[in-house]
Length: 268
Image (cartoon, rainbow, N blue to C red; front, side, top):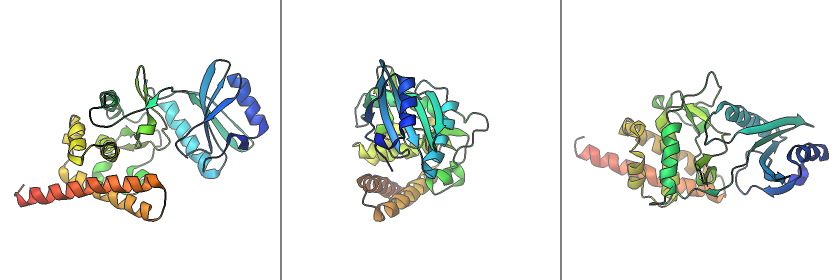
């Protein structure tokens, strides 16, 4: 649950102020993995601060810190520094200035995202980094989802920041170790939500060999399982974003179901 900057103890604010050279704070408008998330500016420098004190919040932020330190990619924000005090974990990330990506059809941001995807889905998990399994991250599983690729798992527009040097990918708090096609499959609902019909979304992803190499039945199963998960979550919550995801994953599942019926009828 996101909290106001004033929730931070005075001594922690003092340490942050000393390191940044001031504390002009702009709270983040998205996300809820950490209790505190804000851009902090002082002395001409800006950083992005995340802080957590609850057991779940600290565990999640510690995980994100571990993952972020292990990624050596230009599109992943660097960790500047971190410290713990009074039960709080505070992490300073490189501040990324830009607008969230526009994933609508014909948007130039799609080409920028494609460049990142080509690298991301070929990136193996470094060393023995203990990342989420597909089942632990997504709540469902299939043998084909297993793999050794670093999968961000949440490439929604708010986590894709367009800068003069390209798209930066923020918030690695839910990164997982999986097959490369899983990253692409998780992007389908966000493409649908940005205006792509399911067929068009799949067509855009088909430029990646990992997509074409995945058997249709596996994608059918993934789409169905993901839609069932978000349908259940939406029935248990009034959060608009959950209902949006339920609608978008449902559209993709229905499309794939219809496609499967047509293929079966055609004897394929």
